Amino acid sequence: MNDITAAAPPAPVAVAEAISGEAIAREIADMGVTHVITVPDTNLKTAIAALEKAQRVKMLYVCTEDEGMGINAGLYMAGLKPMMLIQNNGLYACINTLKAIALDAQVPTFMLIGQYGRDVTKTVEENRLRSVRLLEPTLETWGVPSFRLEHKTDIGNIRLAWQKAWEIVGPTAAIIGAPTS
Amino acid sequence: MLKQEAIDILGAGRGEAISVATMQSAAPWYLSGQGKNLHVDASGCMGSASSLGLGLAMGKPGRKVIVLDGDGSLLMQLGSLVTAGSFGLKNYYHFVFANGAYESSGNQTVPGQGVFDFCALAKASGYRNAFAFEDAAAFKAGLAKVLEAEGPVMINLTIARDEAKPRWPGVKMSGQVAALKEQLAALA
Picture 1 (cartoon, each protein chain N blue to C red):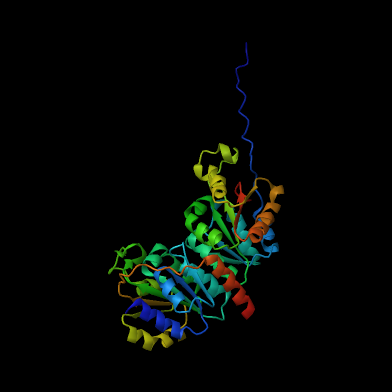
Picture 2: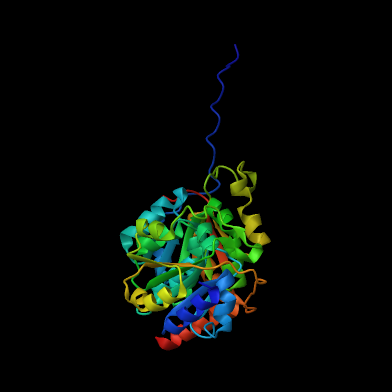
C-alpha cells in the first residue's frame, strides 16, 4: 500500500528579515541627527520606541508628511540636522512637497521609509500591493536615490542614504523591507 | 483692508523677525524690500508656509518668525494648526491674508467662506493667542501688541479681493533657502 500522507508544505522563507529597532535608533543618533519628524509607520514602531527611549534625538510628531517636509526644511535653514520617518503611503501623500521643497528648493531631506503591507516572504517586485511595488519606481521617477535594508547586515545603508542627502542637497530614502524587531 | 496696506504695516513693524510668505502675499512682500533679508517664500507647495515657519521657529527660538499665509493655502494643510498648537512655540506668528478667494487662479471662492473661523480654529488647536483685524487702521494700531503676545499667535487679516493680474516674486526658492541658511548661520 502506498503512503498517501502528504508532506507539510515548507514554511515560507523570509526574503526580508527584521532589523532591530534599537540598532536603527542607535545608527540615527550616531549620525548626528537632531530631529526625527514622523507620521508613524507600523513597520517601524520598535524603531520609534527605541528613539523615544534613548532620548538622543528630538521626536516631532506631525499631522501629515507635507508638514514634515516643511518643518524639515525650516530646521535645516536654522542649522539643524533633521530627518523624516514615514511609511510608503506617506511618500505618495507628499509628492508635491517633495517636488517643491526637497527637490526644487534643494533641501537635504533624508527619509527612512517603512514598506507597510509588504509580504516579507516575497521580493518587493513580487508583492501584491502596489504601495510596496511602486515605492522605488516612484522615487526613481523623481530622481530620488534610495537604499534598501533587507537584512541586518544592511544597517549601514541608513548612513549611506543620510550622507547622500547632504551630498546632493536633496532628498534620499532608506527603505526598511520588513517590520523592525 | 487692501493687501498692500497690510503688507506695508507688517513690513514696518517686522523688526528683525524671519519671514515666510506664500502665494499672493509673496510678490508685494518681496517688491517692498522685505524679501531681501531673513526671508523665504513657500513656492510651488501651497499650504507649506506654516510648516516652513514652524521649523524655523523651532530652530531659532530666540528670534520671532512671521508667516504670511493665505486662507486657501492654510485650508490645504489645516492640520498644521494642530501641529503648531502642539509645538507651542512662543516665537511663532501666523498671519493669514484672508480674502476668501483663490486669487492666483482667478478669484474663485474658497470652500467654507463665511463659515469657518481661523481664530477659533487656532485657539481650539492650542494657539495661545488670536487676533482678527478687518481694517488697516486697527491693524496698524494693534500690531505692536500682537508681536508682544506669546506664541503661537494667529492673526486673521480680512483682505479685499484684488482683481489685478496675479504677481509672482520671480525668485527661486532654492536661492532663498541657501541665503537664509547663510544669514542665520552668520547671526549665530
